[in-house]
Length: 352
Figure (cartoon, rainbow, N blue to C red):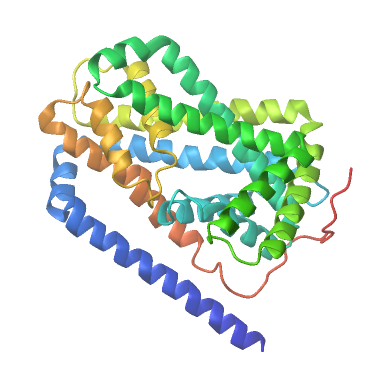
């Protein structure tokens, strides 16, 4: 029986990797073009491209450190190396699923597979997501205070792009905070959404779905109650998020240096990168395909010469889309296999 389960897991792993490779190859051939990719690397300064890749690695390392910080609130302890693997699995599935919806479920699956309670995993990741959304919102507010007039004067439609992204990100952060602080209100709101979807015939088995909603809200609320007691830990996570985002937003700066763009305004370029992230966060396509490139074109047309802008978009996508998929695929290769508990404690209950 164990061999059969393990074989099924290996088959699923193989199918996922094969599909991902096919998607990547199709994307590279038909969207970006292999010739274009080769030409870009021939004409760019390699040292700055390495710096861009290093920024992404640091972004992942800090992400893992933030999740690791959240998990320390619970009785079970998870080694950093396992949290880093969880992070890379999340990066992989975020890139290959619409609106990055597949990352967290796969991370919870992996953490539970190695013996970390599903309730603890859900709470840790959702609290981390709240901190990320707050960090991105605060980062964007600061950016807009300093750069809004300049961007709005040079970019047609910037106001609508940013307002949409800002409202959406802020709404998500507020919604998650309401779940954490007001359990009954969150349940009523989720019940209302479920009933509306059921009336529209978009949701089946309403009563069963409501039970699942109640269970998940209870689990998250209880876990959040534990974490929110440690204000110092939450502040550390927030500061680490700001640092993490700064590394991510510095990637376009390294691309500009690699292309020899003159007079690079570092802060302004990082501000533009934060606007791109905010505007494209919830585009319902894998990797925010199309929307991310369009946002980059709109904002970074201010910095890159027209002849180099398309190449800049391509390299940026290589760093923020292809690179996470390739690295995440390596860490996800044995995701669906036999359960391997590495923790001594396997208690699943959430305690005060």
